[in-house]
Image 1 (cartoon, one colour):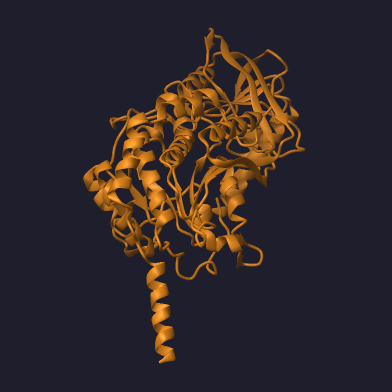
Image 2 (cartoon, rainbow, N blue to C red):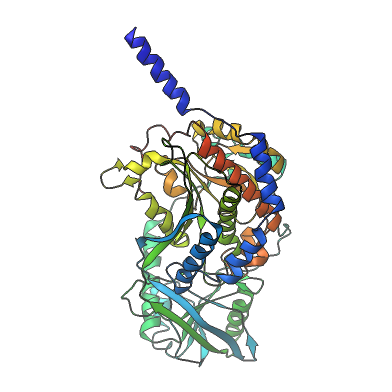
Length: 517
């Protein structure tokens, strides 16, 4: 009889842990009414883009943004708004202070350009002839020795423009959403998976070595600037250079749209003398901290209040714009979801925590710093906070509407979302995909087997505009963001009040592996 009681008790505990409960229709009505009738989305959107500006990891602009966001969260009435430093960043801080570039011969033309992050400055306004550095072998490189000093070095074109007949913006079709429900683990609908071909490692290593020698020659001979083609439609993209604190300041580098870059390359190949004038002023500074911003709505249940439902997106952006779609949009939605719940006076059983990550673009550093408090990678051991991790919802695919969620092959999560999504299906949230998606902050937790998920979002024009100087307020779909905030607020309160929790993946945390980004 005693054994039977123990077995029944264990069964009851298992059933309780796996409970799935949808909150009341009345609460769903209140969440939607607050989200749509009293929306702060536009005000938050202007704040997160126009007011904050660019937010490159560790930069002075990012530190400024952290401070302003904390002040905003305080005004919203959230608990304990704060900044925490979570990672040491070897590149340190870098900010743009001035960028100007123009072709002056064979005629004048001002260009829209973007400096490569963590590269150097010119000595005021400088002028020089352009040299096309067409190098494929060490023998090619030797031809340019002694010829780069005081010159503007153009790297050869790596891409050419081709006309696209695809629409500039798009939404998921019903058929595409249906395909996302196919489980790719079974080999069904797996055509979109990335497949690595055979890599000639010796050729790859030789190419890397040649690039190092090229960079050293350019630096040693004191070229004025290096220019690469990247981006199109007069919109340069953004990237960062190889630098760490203590290194010599790198040669100035610019990214230029392929149309303008291609024009100069073609002129030089035709025998024309091409000249430019440039003035680049970039500032290196001492800060090496990757920082996150947090705030909470505290849990009220004595037994559950230490468990956390986490809502997040990354606050950092590239330096060429205000990071509208990538990823002010995610921060806007998560902040608005918190506001909705706060203004409704919701008292969640579990704590609902907002996390705005730093350093996502450089390696998910902010979320990885948070994950270090959950799991000791050296000892392969879960830390106490691991067991308090109830759910993480992440937004980082632009400002498109939520159509569902990727469940990261955690079959145990599906019954929860099936129960929770009933009141939000009318908002278009219908698709539960068993598949994985990558390249953003939920991976820091999913790799530990924790329930951490990225939303399925309409693409809109995200792929055309992210990581460019075009990623501004104008890239935000405000109506979609309103719907996304309502969905997030609803899922957060469902997870915070459910008597059960989504279990971690079977076999974890023992199966956890270091995250590679």
